[in-house]
Length: 219
Image (cartoon, rainbow, N blue to C red; front, side, top):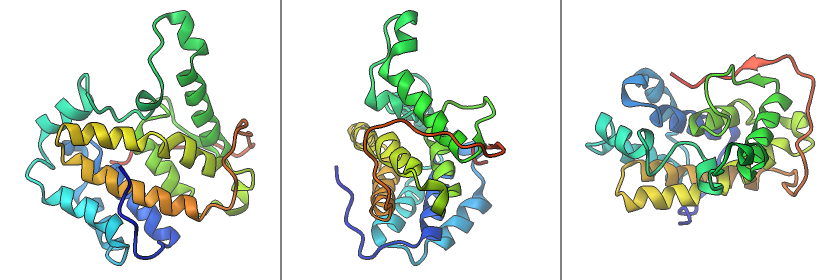
C-alpha cells in the first residue's frame, strides 16, 4: 500500500526525528521512554501530514501501549515480525542452507553497511531488526561524502523500503494500530530516497575503516 504523498519535502533533521520516533514506538511498551517520544513528536510538528499523522494516530489508539497487542503481533511467534528479512526471504529449511541463503546474504550486506559508517551492533540485536535499522538511518541522515558509494541509499532502498509494503499489509490484516506507524514510515523513507543522489543498483557494499561506534536499540 502506498503512503499518502507528502505536501512538501522534509528536511534532514525531521527525517532523523521521524526515524527515532518510529524506533522508540516499535519497542515493547514498557521499554519506551515517554520523554524521548515527546521530544521527537515536537521535532515533527512542522513535518508533512503524511509523516506526522501516523505516530499521532498510533499514540491516540487505545492499544498503543497494550503489552498483549505488542507480544501477539510483533514478538512471540509473530505474524508481523520486526525483522525485515522475514518479509523478503524464506527461512532456510536446513542448517547447511542457512549459510548460503539469500537472507544470510541480506544480513551480511546490512552488517557491511553498519561497518561502513563505523557502527557496531555489539552482538545485541540482529542486523534486520527494524528499530536498529531506523536508528542507523537517523544517525546517518547527513552522511554526505561518507556515502559517495551509495551505501546508505542502497540500505534504505533494498534493505528497508522493499520490506515495508509486506509488513504494512500484514499489520493491516491483523487490524493492528502499528500499521499507522509503518504507513508513515513509508512516507519518510520515500522522501529520504528522493533526496539520495547516489544510485542503489546491484553490487556489493564497500567497507570503510572507521573506528566502530556501538549502535544500540533506543530506550
